Image 1 (cartoon, rainbow, N blue to C red):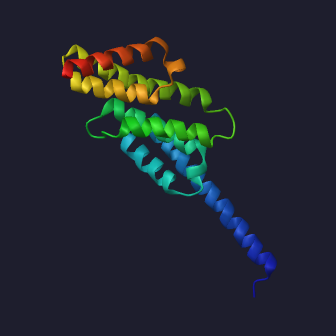
Image 2 (cartoon, rainbow, N blue to C red):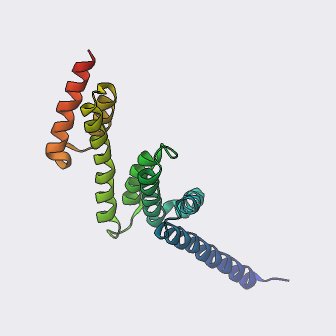
Image 3 (cartoon, one colour):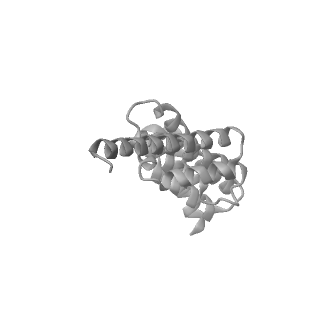
Length: 168
């Protein structure tokens, strides 16, 4: 017969085992990302995000953000939502972090990902694709804080408005 002490010890063991397994999954994701094994890293971060405990871990979202960012840069057509997923992952990392260890990286990467919308707007505008330019500038303006975006924010407002005017 198992006594109270045996039950408590079993629960503690399971808790420790679960924590080790979770950290192993995140370590694997980090190694896969470093080795540019993006499909494997994607599977690892998706598994981590689905785990209730890991979904509250800032490192999960940090690794997810960098995985989606890398997918956006390498195969955007294969993973069309990767840019949005990178942005939301970096944002979630900032809100789940209990300290500032991820703040600088996530803030910088979030700004970088936002800038890709601005750059796509500029490219579309220069190509005469005003509908697409208006779309990308609109996304940039809706997600960027005016004080952070500075001159780029103003340019996005101007060229987005100009693109919309050319459509009429």
